[in-house]
Length: 267
Image (tube, rainbow, N blue to C red):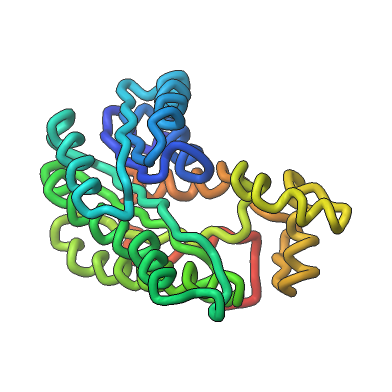
């Protein structure tokens, strides 16, 4: 299927690794020019090389601190100087985890700064560029935990729920501009950072943190939240649906919250 992304311009925040990089690579393979934003320049440089190999006509990595409003504004100013317009914005940034009793006010502030306000600020900074394009799409990445709670990630989930609400609201206010806005809610996804963080914990149960089936076995055992397909997901499975939603091929889906989680029991 031709997604109509050839010649388009896209920004992916958090695009130097994990789901963000998988999304950026998918868009690049469809012929989009890509700007990826993240903090570490070395990882950005590596990502840009991958995007050019994947087929992006143009690719750039901009170092930006998504916890800092001025840094976000400056990053999008750089995009404007380079392209003057933008077709696709994908926002993938999220905060860390933590149990309620372990989170003080500073931790809550950090969760909402990264989990909600980074998205608000990125979309606000991108809007003039999106409005300047012939067509434009926005996708934010939330989490299936906003509907299927997990006490270990209370701040993360609250911030992502707020981001989902903002995304839904924007789909209404931006419809008059022809800008389609949607939210993707990944389930448990086996990224490199997920594996690195949990490999020893899963190993203690005799499980492999790189194996999607082992990961879901662990999730079911400790959190009682299995999925119908019996395995965790992969970054490219998030990338494929996101690429469609930000593409010109998508002409009628807006305001949707799309679960990509292998099947679960919530509505």
